View 1: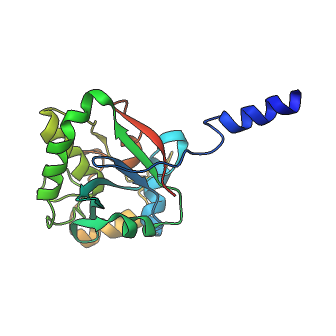
View 2: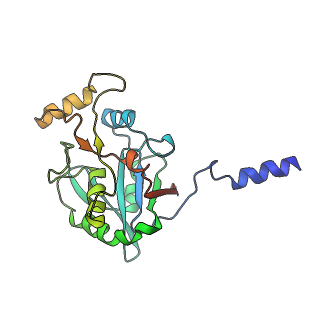
Length: 206
């Protein structure tokens, strides 16, 4: 009897393994990319759903049954086939879905994101400068659809945890950009968005 109870608990517990889900139009996909020191620095100062690392995200678009992800990556905002997006990382990816009361926002949010395809990537990581990094694109898409902030902006930090020193990778990056490190300016990140109470993490896709 005890063995049966253990097996039953093992089979039904939602916390033992991430539920595999099928993504749909308007879903958010959270990724942990391996991009060297910069990704390591982002992960060191951000905490995501279930204490996981997320340093990239995109918005799913269904076009006649073919799934794409609108994302800001590389040099611009792009529309990437989902099958290619999945290949970016060996780590498990998680799907966030807006709660039912916000589903009406999705057509407008997706349309806004698609209109940004081709907009330059925001290597300055400064909000509202006519360029986009990954979570900034999602922030503005839902801001446009909601008519007010949907997600939250927080002061950004480029310093090592519990230190006054900047990560060396950020020092080099912003020297190359020719600007001061935008410490403390408002911004957003995928990990923080994965914790927002207006969305629900429904499982993984790989």
